[in-house]
Length: 141
Length: 147
Image (cartoon, each protein chain N blue to C red):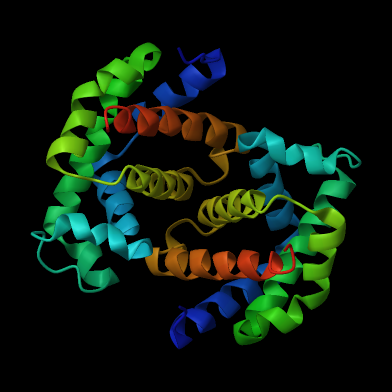
């Protein structure tokens, strides 16, 4: 359950991070690959070495989708409709990986925002990313 | 037995040698109580946990957070047998404290995030992996004596 204040906070944070979407996205992905090697199996067709073009463009895509969703969280199911279909029928990523990625995104935010990543911001962000992942997985079955 | 690479051993020793226990411990426990409010169930006698500010300023939370973090020191010194190092603590958490072991993972995730905020870019993906592996072993050992 997200309060109005939390939704504002989330929208504000992602608004600030949109210009560095590539950096944030790539870092979160790299952290996931380092900590959960199984997640790499979904990227066997791409070059996911640090600073590779594939990694950065992919990271950017993900962060921009998260940022877009943050603009109107009550409309997540609408905003994510096409991505839901993509993940369910084409990508078919095991949803536990969404949890791993969300955690690594939180760690990335902590490493970048340092003390600005307050417990309140962390709680709000964790809730948002969980909701995002749940909506993304809705068409899986 | 857990296999540790030289990098992993060095990373864990390094992180804890620079650890500011009185900052990180309280911050990690407070964060856990704020981000996962149901964990407050184990701290009924800690006084005011009404909101994030109260939790972050609560002296009992701070003291306990420091205690918990120092509890990891034994694992750092005995990385090759963390399992038996925590056998007693595992029994305590199960039989006396009745803590659901899923909570250990929640606290360890919060600790990871606090350490990430402290170290910034030094907390690379590889360092994160080593730190998470270490905490996973601790968490597993703490849950081992439950039945």
